[in-house]
Every structure is written in structure tokens, then in C-alpha cells.
Image (cartoon, rainbow, N blue to C red; front, side):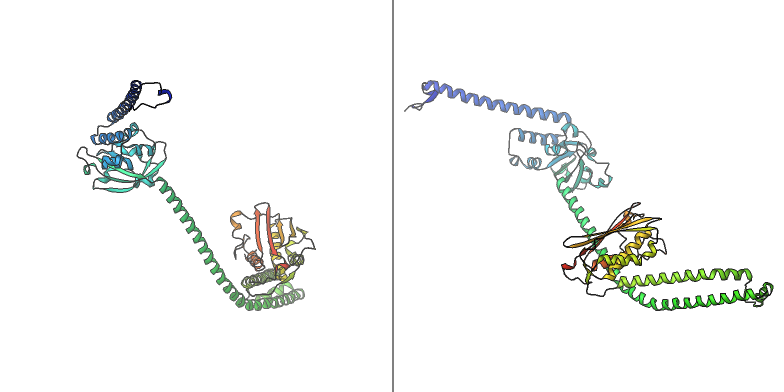
Length: 486
């Protein structure tokens, strides 16, 4: 039976001989195509090998290049070409002579660094060293590390465009695998991304450790403050009684001295000045004359007054310590904050005097808060005193308040000297003060914040040096449930 019988389409009108000619032509064209492709591949191989030979005289390098080029051009399976082909296919490979001059680099290594053959072959391996990073010197490429045998480590190199990249390298002498050349061979894998991820993880761990250290410091500080509260209570109790004695005795001494001063002044009026001078000199233990006696009589009231002020300051410190260490629970009741502000204004009047004006913007219909009237009055008094002392010359303090369905908000702001940014984080710490020695104990704001926290609220501050300071207080309203000091 004719094999071409029954054909349709464009071949239907051809005979058997015509179809045979067409088929032969197609087969011939396919053969020509493959021959041409093989020729082009052969020419490409020759060109690449010629380029390499012009750059390197290493016979082992030429062998590696021959394997790589043929495998790539003819699509050969490198796994069947032996161990050298597999190394070239799977790793970044570089060879050097005994002096560290590069004799071969495979396509993977060239691609990783963005180089061409002519950029590397014939150059010393030190061209990869990122010399501007001396801290990485231990990771520079050094082929002489293989003099004692196989070496493995992380190598840091610089790419053609200046970026750093990392390779986990194995390095050993060429004598382990060939007798053709003396030198060394590197092969390894790109770990740049892994190093970057590790760096991020290390930084995250460091940040976490820093935060843990901060928390530990805060816990230690809290323990110290708790101990300080206990110590403060004991100190205040122990000092309070003797200070009371000293204060009472000082007032009595002042009365005695005033009486003696009156007697001496009366004697001076009744005795001749010359006889009075002789009277003073009869007592050898006294080194007084009329002039020095006059100075004593004039100076002793000021000395007593300054001593009394010092005693009052000590008593104030004791009161502050007692408030600071106070930890007794008490039930709170609905409180009118506006009344607390008025009480504080009365108590702080000596600081305001006539130089600091106070502008109130508080609606009398605002809801009440749960709390202690005496404690909240103390908070506002501390804020008013601080604001007044921050104002040099004349100035103004503004107190405004408002409320929503959950919170009562009130602020105390002044146009004083303000607080430096680096000190804002410390102003609520016990005994920290920006005032000169003798002007403050550093407990007022710490006590105020403690009171507000016991009321379930917050006390925050904003300040701009040279423009003033603003303290904002937020307190829960009475209808939010009864609160009590913790």
C-alpha cells in the first residue's frame, strides 16, 4: 500500500516522488541548522577560551574554564562531568598562584562581585579588600592561610560598584587536586543576605537587652524608692520631736534676748557713757566695748530671724518627707476641684504676692471627682508655688479646666523661665530640683504625682525654655466608681 495515499491539503496533488523531495529538504535543513548551531557554539567556546588564555597562563585555570564554557554552551549536565564541574556549577570559585595573583574565577564569582574576567584575572586578591573597614581585616581574602592545609571561614569582599558582600569560603592548596599548577583554590557560597539578617537579629537582641536593662534599672530604682519611703518616715518621726524642742527654745531665747537688750538700752540711757564703758571692761572675760555691744544689739534680731527661717525650712522638709512616705489607704469622696484650687491660692499667697497674676478659667458647674480635698489642694499649691518661683519679676499663671463624660482635666501654666528638655524626665524624681540651694526640697512634684496616681489620674508636663511650663492633670469623674488610695 502506498504510504502517501490518502493525503489531503497542499500535499494532496503531489505524487510520491514530490513528497519524498519535500521530506528530504526538510531533513537537510534541520541538519544544516544543528550544524550551524554547533559551529556557533564552537566559535563561542573558542572565543571565550582565547580570551581567558590571553589573561592567564594557568593550565589548571584553562581546564576549569574549558569545563565551564563547554558545559554552558552545549547544555551539558555538569554532574556527569566530574567533581570539578560540580564545584564550578554549585559554588563561587576562585584560584590564585602562590603569590595570591588571581588565575581563574568562575561565572558565579564574577556575577557576585559584578566583575569581568579582565577585571580580576592577573590582579592580586587584595583588590577585594575593603581597606576602609579595618575592623573587618580578619575576614580579608588571604590565600596563604591555606599553607597549613584546608581553611574555612567567612570572607568579606568589595564588589566592583563598592558594595560589600560576604562568602563562606573553603580554601586549600591546588596540590590537593592537581599536579599541573601551584597555588590555591577558593570555593564557597554567598552569605551576604544571611549576614544582613544576622546583623538585624543581633541589633534586635541588643535593643531588647537594653530595654531589659532599663526595666531592671527602673525596678531597682522602685525598690530604692520604696526603701527611701520607709527610711523617710523614720527620719521624719525621729527629727520631728527635737526640732520642735529647738523651735520652742529658740522662741524663748528670742524673748530672753529681747528683754536683755531692753535692759542694756535702759542702762545706757541712765549711766554716763564713760562709766558704762568702764562697767563693760570690769568683766575680763568679755571682749566688749560700746561699739561691739551696739553691733550685737543691732544684729541679734536678724540672726534670730534667720535661725527661725532655717528651723521652719527643716520642719517643711520633714512635712514633705512625711507626705512622701505616706501610704495609708483612705476612702475618697466627691470633691469640687474648683474649691481645692481656691484653697491652694490662699495657701500660696505668700509666693504670689503682688507680682504674679492668676487667671482662672474654671466653670463652677463642672462635675466632681473622687478624691481627697486636702491632698488635691496640696497638689495645686505645689504647682502654684513652683510656677511663681519660675517667674522672675512680674508674670502670669493661668488655670483652666474642662470635663467630658469620663475625665476631669485641669492645667496650670506659667510664662516663666521654663525647664530644659534634659531635665523634664527627672522633675518627678524625689529630691530632684532645678531651684538653687535653699529654695526647694525636690519633693513637691514627686508628692504631687504620687497623689494624682492614687486618685487614678495622670500628671504630665510640657515646657519650652524661655517661654514657660504647663502641667496637665487628668482625674476620673465621681460617677466612674469610688476610688481609694493605693
